[in-house]
Structures are given as structure tokens and as C-alpha cells.
Image (cartoon, rainbow, N blue to C red; front, side, top):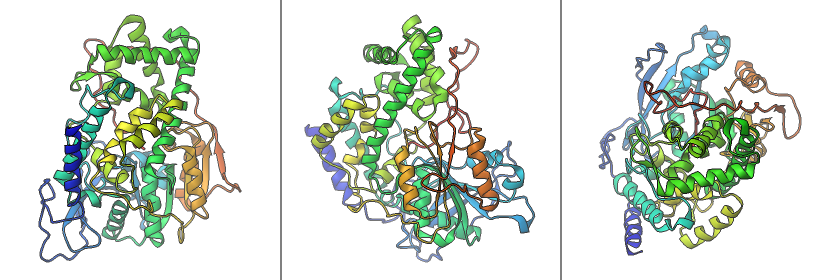
Length: 541
């Protein structure tokens, strides 16, 4: 405990510096000095991205203020790309900015991919704009606090295993490391800051208005932009929606309960396919088999190569929770359990972990995730409160509660506190009609968020996929959803239904039960899924 107190004290000491922006060379973690003279808004100088699959894709870096309260002070850089409109000038509809969520996920893959999902006569009328949020990916600086934070084998998530102290120390150390290296930028990585960056991109593009598509946290980003700059919005699409007023702590509890429902659905699906997977004919038995594998990994973790370290119970849970985001993973997940229990074959587990949960070369967008979540609300700082409150949630939702708790535990120690009033209030005043998409079974951005956003935005239209479970429901081949999106982009057409829900679409069918054989000895397992892969997941929220 003394070590933990020391870590908390270190985080608190650096927190006192959290609001200072003394300046830094943007590519490093040491503090830069602002230019003596600065004219403000940067310019976009486009050059080829040298993308072999999309030669027309152009890239640029944009200087933006670190602190928009001091627009002529220190600058950081935002990586931007675009797929230019090819329609005649009089048919063009301006830029559409794109964000996949996270917070902090790269949007650079989106222009080529999403433009390719839309009929050419519509896609050709827009400039498709992707960007990396400040402090992430190819933007400068790229904030990283502990490159090995996610390397396995990490402490067990389950508090019953006596690992709470280890996780508290790990979380406090991470917050202190972030504060020690990046106190000059962390307070300026909020959703509001990113929304102001979007307006800097708009100005640099020379556009009076922008169009926008955002999924997951991107819906919070888009609605925040609309609140700050309503007259600059032409059209806006929000897909898989974060409620506009819920605290991030409470949002995570909603996630816990919805992820439990999705895991129960996976277990029921697997039980119906007992002739394929041999894991039992009822959901309760399948869930016991899952727990049996997790228990075995506590004493006998599996080699994670090519990822570093071992696959223990924490890594096992991470591998499985993504099935809630994307049910197309269910056949591979069921195969993992079946192979381990019926053949003691760990290869499917190794492959699934490397596809779905293995860490990247550093801590990725986790600093950005924390900078948004921890800084936009006043999080509880008392471990006793967390312990008691999360135990109540775990009693009804044991699949994901403690996993999610420890993923967010750095907020107990984060150097900057949020506004006691919460996130920016969304009223929709001055906005054009916004098109909203929401699945009823989405575990990451639960259905309540879509309802709340619709009620907050007068004139918005809500499209609901009843029984649907995808997180980010567009671009999966559902014509009912995708055609609605296309019509809105084409000419602003909206669903005509009255009442709370303007249009409903049917859910996607469950995947066929297939035993996913591991690759042969001459093949290599994919280390990562490309963002456009059907099994990929976008947005941590």
C-alpha cells in the first residue's frame, strides 16, 4: 500500500502542472516553446499519400493551436487525408469529415473505404476527409505513456483472484507516467479540443460548411462540433451513439450489462451448434466451459507469439469481449473453446488473441482514451466506492464488469479532473436535421444513447435496427440501412416516419456455425486485422 500511496502522490504532484502549457517540440514528450510570432490558422499542403490501392488519396499535416484559448501560441499537427470529389464543380457537395470513434482511433482508412461503399454518382460529389485526432497515430506528437502496458501476461481481472492491488498500482503508475511525460498536452485532448480541430480543418479546406459521419465516440465528437459550430454543419450522420449527457463512468456500467447480454447470446448460439463445437446443448453449460478455460489459463498460460508474453486469463477475456462488438467472430470464438477443451489445442486461442486482442507496438490510443474519458467528468477517486459499486454490477454482469473496470481505472488517478457539470450540453440549437443510426443490441454504445441523442436534437431522424447487434451498423451490406445513408448524402432526404423512430430495419442473420481450422504449418496467422476486414472492430466505446 505504501508503494501505491507514493504512486498516487506522484500523479497528484504532476497534476498540479496539468494546466500549464509551457511548450514542446511536437515530436517529443519534452516541453516546446511557442513561436514568438504566429499568424494562427495553418494551411493544408497536399501531396500524394503514395497509396497503391487508392492513388488519388492525398495527405497533409495541419498546424492547429495546442490551446484554442491561445490561438497564436504553441502549435501541434493533425494528420489529414482526402479523396477528392471528381464530379463537376456544380455538382459537388463539399467535404465530409469522418471519424470511427475510439476515442483516438485513426480515420485515415475511412475516405477510400466509405467512399467505396456509396454509389459512385454520390461518392463523386464529396471530398472525403479522414484525420488522426490530436496526440494519436500519425498526428504530431504521438502521445504514448507506457509502450508495454498491454503486454501479456497481465494481472487477472477478477478481484476474487487477489489482484486488485496489482491493478491499482499498474493504473496509478500509468496515470503518473502520462502526467510526467505529457502534462503539457493531456488537458487539451478532450472531445471539445478535437471538435475545434475539425473546424480548423474546415477553415483550411476553405469550406463554409462541412458534412460529417461519425461512429461510436465519433457521435460524441460530431454532436459536440454541432453544438459549438451549428452554422458550419450541412449534413451530419451519427452511427452507434453515445448518450449526450451520461457520465463516462455510468456509460461503462451500461456497457457491462449489455456485453453480458451479448455473451449470453453467444453461449446460446454455441449451444445450438453442439454438433459442431461439442460444448453442451444449453447456454449455461457453454458459459461454464468458458469459465473452465479461463481457470486453466491461470495456472497454465499459453504462449502468445508473435505477440509478446503469455495469454493468461486477462488476455483470454480481451479476446472474447470483442464478440459483443461483432458477432461474425462467434465461429472463431466457439472454435477456441472447443479446440482447447476437446483436443487441448491452443492454436485457435493463439490465433484469435493475435487477431483480436494482441497489443500493438505501443499503448496506441489508450492515452487519448483516458484523456477524453478521465477529463470530461469528475470520476470517483475512492477505491472503496469502486469496489462496492462494481461488485453490485458484477453480480448481474460478470462477463465484462471487472475487465472494463480495470481498463478505466487510470481515471482514479488521472492528473486532470473533469467539469463537475459534466460534458458539454447538447441541445441541437441551429443544427439542420441529423440522421441517427442505432442497433438495439449494441453493447458498446447501448440503445439508450440513441434515444437520448434523438431527444436532444430537434428535427433529427432515428433509424433503428431492431435486434441488430453490430457496433457501427452501416457498411455491413444491409440495404435498409445503407440506402438510407445514401439518400441523405445524395440530396438530404430523410426517413418520413413519425414519432420516436423514423424507420426500422431488420437484424442481420446469425453466422453459420463453422469450426475454424487453424492455418497449416506453412501458413502464418494474421497479426492484425485491417480496418476494413468484416471481423474488425472500430471504436472502443
